[in-house]
Image 1 (spheres, rainbow, N blue to C red):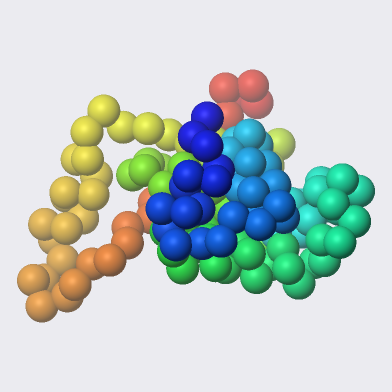
Image 2 (cartoon, helix red, strand yellow; image 1 turned 90 degrees about the vertical axis):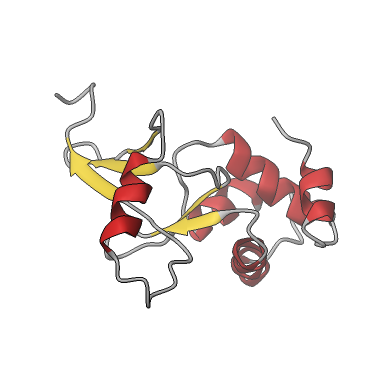
Length: 136
């Protein structure tokens, strides 16, 4: 796991105790938690952590490319500390969200090739839905 303090400092984010805890949680939890899930998981260990601080911290992280937000369902934004180029898969039966890593960037390259050059792509996010291996 990458050292949270170093990651935050490299992004010019002051590494407070709460920010470190939030980033560490996102790195450890690969289930792409919502802001509320992060807050609920950390509030007992960090009594001064507020829901607002949690939301604002996640927004700060996203603005500074420390995490990415994903919206794979209508009702919730989820967060992922892995900002590498990958797909997200949601199981329509159990609701779990998984990372799918490709051996190359063929999907992104294909998308970029069909978009007119007059557009400037800043982010490509691909979501897939179906049955995970456990539910299949």
